Length: 399
Ligand SMILES: Cc1ncc(COP(=O)(O)O)c(C=O)c1O
Image 1: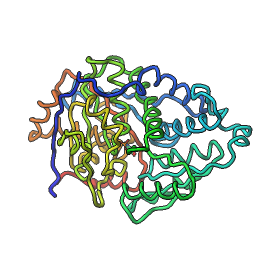
Image 2 (image 1 turned 30 degrees about the vertical axis):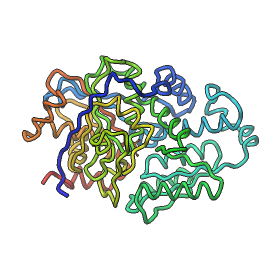
Image 3 (image 1 turned 90 degrees about the vertical axis):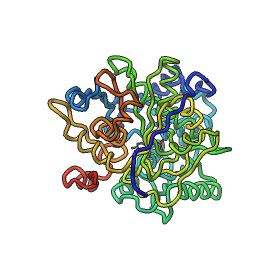
Image 4 (image 1 turned 45 degrees about the vertical axis):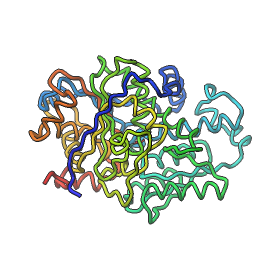
């Protein structure tokens, strides 16, 4: 299939038919307080790229740099750590508001709870966050990765304390494998996507991502006009889009969802817009490993349908372009190390602004020299060999 740009626009804003209570600003505040109890917590930087914005024909560009999150090089730990914390609070019979890292890591908590094994499937970042959190609270973790996963990402998960391995199947089948092992062994599945009958933990994971969204809204000098969000299963995008809708109501910024052509399940679901989720199968061999998911998170779609405006499916080379620009921005702008999934939405916007053949998209998204655009660089160089091949050697340049 030839890679190309596709756009679907939905007009459901104002219909207000989704439940935003779990993504309210008040909930986000509580969750941020929980994350702030971890000694390594610090808000990640929001970087203003003024010269690059001018170069690309945008008013301003802000990039939230999640490579600084908890020393784990990606935002994902926010979800797993909150879901695990909440699960343990329930087990202890205490309100979620009262939990803290100190309480979860105490020998008394371990004595009360005994041994618990957490299991998950991941393309890297989520599994590292689950493994890290399980180790912090003195529990065991088992992590499965889809075939083709980068060795470095596997090694980082093992170093975080998990019993981790790469399977012979794609991401969605790896999720089914983890689920089967959880059921067979009585382990706790901490999956960052939901399906019928499995919603509690994915909901907590989405809530965990609100810490990132809340920080960004507080750091922004003024309200963004556009927010670009990359999607795998859509949990991160759903969480941030829901938070934006909670914060600004009808006056919220335009939300643009970005996915690779090879794994554009949210785009296809938006295109159909009939209430049924659409899936992508096969290997999904996109360079955006974190976005190589073929089945949307049902909870996230319920939010995105009403809280996102545009859905873009794009070629792989835009992620590589985004990594190169963020690593070498214009003028005096600060450089950001951003990985394939982290740079995808920024790279997509940069291509839309500079490729004359995409003027129609620029117009449709109303991107011009007056707009203020917020991006989330959701990971750093989580696959260093590929980062170098792309940034130094120009791998995956546009044909
Ligand atoms: C770096 C990065 N960005 C974005 C995403 C997308 O998140 P979600 O699967 O919730 O859509 C992922 C998912 O693993 C990721 O690792």
